[in-house]
Image 1 (cartoon, rainbow, N blue to C red):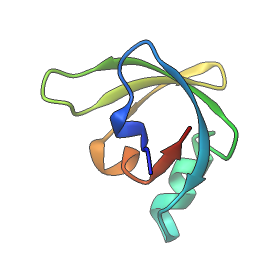
Image 2: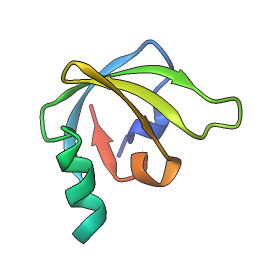
Image 3: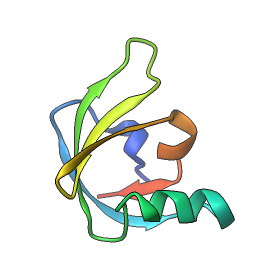
Length: 73
């Protein structure tokens, strides 16, 4: 399983599934990260946290714990 954590800056990927539960999964979905959403990884901080992504026309900064549950292809 490949997650958003494995993507390098400049790559565009598609979301396959969200593996979280409850409030975490709902929060990620409320940000527009749903199945088949295209995500462009723009930047990764020097220590790997946070990760800046571009999704559905806007930029987000996500923590490592959040991107671990996002399965991509």
